[in-house]
Length: 396
Image (tube, rainbow, N blue to C red; front, top):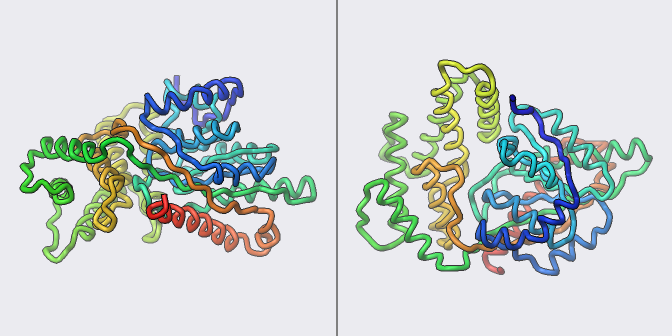
C-alpha cells in the first residue's frame, strides 16, 4: 500500500488529554526532557482568552515538538501542529494525527496542507503551532531566517473570515523562544562525546582542553569532506571559507545529478527541500537502477541541512555547555550517520513567551500592501524570538 500524499488531523481530544496527563513522565524518562516556563509567560497566553492563536517557536532540535506539547499540557489546551511529512511513518502516522498533527511536504507547494491549515485557523479558539524556520537550525540560541508563509497563512485565513462575517477577528501571533539547558554533568557529556568522535576518527588528542579537542575533531571532518568532494582549500581561507566551499560543492552535486537549477539568491534550505521532495517522489515510484545513487544524494541533502547554519566562532564567542553540545551533535550526525542522536542527558526546554501581535491591527495595512505587511510581521516575529533567546543567555 502506497503512502498517502497528505495526512490530515484526526484529533481525538480524550486521547490528547490522556497523553497530556502522562506527558511529564514520558518526557522525563523516555526523552530525558522536561519543560520550564514561568507563570508570567503562561499568563501572557492565558490573557488572550478565546482569540485564535498561532504559536511561532524557534526550532533548534528535534525535541521542540515535545516541548510545545508539554506547554499545551501546562495550559490545558489542545494544539494543532504543522509537521514535516517525513515524520508520518507507518508506526507514528496514526498517533500523530490523533494528537492534532498534520503533514506538510516541504519544497512542493503542498496545496492540501495549505488548505487544511486555513480550515483549522478559521475554527473558533484555534491553537496552531507553526515553526517559521521551516526546519531544525541545530543551534540553541541562534535562529535562521523565518519564512513568510508562516505569517501569510494566518493573515489569509483571517481575511477569509472577514469576507464572510464583515469584521476582522482577533488572531494573535505569539513568538516562542525555546532554549535548552543540561542539568546533570554537562562536562561529562562533552567529554564522552569528544572521546567517541576521536576514537571513530582515530584522533589522539594533543591537549585536554575541550575546545581545542573540538576544533581537532572539526578539522578532521573538514579534511574528510574536502577529500570526498575533491577540494583543495585555499591556504588563505579560514574555516568559514572552507565550510562554504564544501557546502557549495555538495549543493552543486545534488543540483547537477537531479538536473535542477535555482536563482543565485534562492535560499539554501528551500533548494534542499525541493531536492528532497523530488527524491522522495522518485523513491515512492517504480524501483530504478539509480536507487542507490538517490540514497546517496538524499544523505547529501541531510548533510546540507546539518551544516546550513554552522560557522566557526559559534562556540568560541560564547563557550556554553549547550553550544558545545550543539556542535558535537552536528559532528556526530555527520561522523556516525545518525539523523537523530539519542538524548545525551537530562535537559530542560526553557520557554520565553514574547509580545503577542494581533493581526487584527494590520488588516487595513495588509489590504494596501500585502507583501510589505507580511515581510514586516515576519521580521518582527523573528526579532522577538531571537532577542529573547539572547536575553536568556544573560538573564535565565
